[in-house]
Image (cartoon, rainbow, N blue to C red; front, side, top):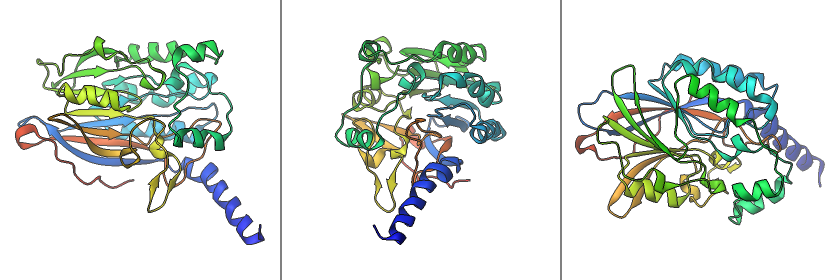
Length: 317
């Protein structure tokens, strides 16, 4: 390999491993999904933190997000990539836990990461091989994470846990939200029959949460009439080609919707779908390229007839 090409390749790897994973930002999006007459809601979605002990920059950035003063914090899972990082994770999220919130877990909340060849990992994702389900992980002795400590801290803060459950949350503004969530479809923990029935008729607005945006789940939520679905898991593709986009999604969602705001249809029904690009990565594949780590501030606004129309995402900061 020519010296110049080798230097360029090394520089690209260093950028993807060291610089971009620390280039944290906030994406701002307006989503017109609320009923007419309802006041706008500021929803901060955080996802795929994958906290590793010693990640001080990520911890400080997450703490700073409290300055956005959201009406609701939504955590769509995969908080850990190190079983020893629970204290640092909770310290990072402490200021955000002062706000109303809700959460679902992902596979990396339950199971500790294990080393895998990064090249093989990407090939498997491109071929649609989506990993072991929960029972298989136990059979293969995949180490467990102390997820109960995270759950207990979130619950103590008043955050609504939505793994295969429904809930209701009253915001400081007085608005009542109906909440429905699923445990992680990536490891086949989702049980839609436990939450079926559609939006809460007694809530001012209802939304749905899931960690991994598998099509079976998106179809079910949309067919049941949820106007907004929030998910994570994909890391936005994690390694993207400029002017082309993501190569993999790590689920059966198409690459065009691997991050950001889009629509999902199921029969005559349509929902707004937001997939977070996340703010971390597995400790053994800590690379991000053309896909900086981010949180999203979604401003939900009313729309005539309560029909979702996608709008161009707002700027980053």
